[in-house]
Length: 155
Length: 303
Image 1 (tube, rainbow over the protein chains, first blue to last red):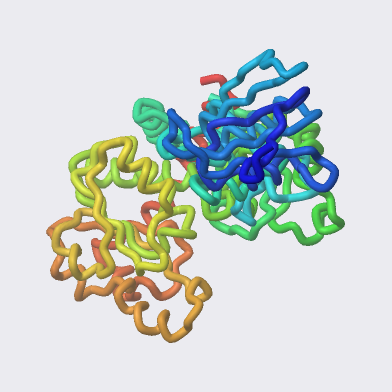
Image 2: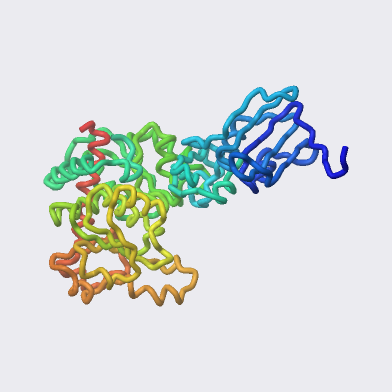
């Protein structure tokens, strides 16, 4: 192998999270709780025919749960999740932000009832706009968008 | 109709019908009615209140219902650490309807989800106070025959004041000519409140000084600017005069201008205003009982 080339192995069994907006790859790692021991390839700021530039995260030996897919859609709307088995893509899912998000977002308003630890209450956020993506808390009306939306994801 | 969480859950037609029923109950005030005989209404006021609680209590009793409840968290199981969900479950077992006031936003909505009984929001944090908004709109309707076409100044703490926010939401159900939102820059109405005005095509303007709009308005809705809301006390001292309504202001206003206030007031209205024709706030407060009678009867009486 030529010294200037670095080996990036293809995923044998796992997921390829593609079409991530530039700068979101590390947040995706955090979201998927990929710490030490995980076999991960992160591509940042690479050419993309769709986005111009993009990030890509490849994870060996992992699948995305429904909840993680919703969380991903909030962090990187439009990202695609390819599931790979034996080097072949067996499914391709687009992370589309849902109209209603139950339990994944935490309300940033400290005096919202959903922040009371001892109450059996789950947050429910409803989508307010798609572009830019924003949601509002159905309990207190607080709106989430941009970096605050990303910061409020709790999986 | 079941739960009453936000005035935005109602249509203008709903409110008009409610006002008609309130007119009827206003005409019956001297009598003890039996509309809700045998029913029990629970008043769960986790946050202190005199006006709202008493007027709900009087409204319930005038309809023949029995009333249970508490007026502060002190001395109840809440003080021992019981959560809201359990308290509401307990009240649900005893009563047919629960009126709740709580310091947290969303508490009434949550209570309505927990409870099989109808829940009426008597104020949740800074967010909603729907029955106050109903009384305020009813007052305007009685004074001017119509809520539409008038110019309003909503003055004071528009950020944390739930009565002001709810009144603004209430106006959005009508076609006011213009709504001036008069507050210090720190206490402007929250984005979600302004969004409702925009979505519903209500003409509004945010202004900092009441003097700039006093000559134009038909209704001045006063609320208190609280000192505690300011990080810098000297800033409060500097701005407070701009949010205090005086006879001098009113002398410059349109003929027939009326002053509303959800009460209690402290010093945001010059005392001399109380004795003038401008002052509509005592009349406004007097409409609380018939309006709440109409509401309780509609929810429980199957009217």
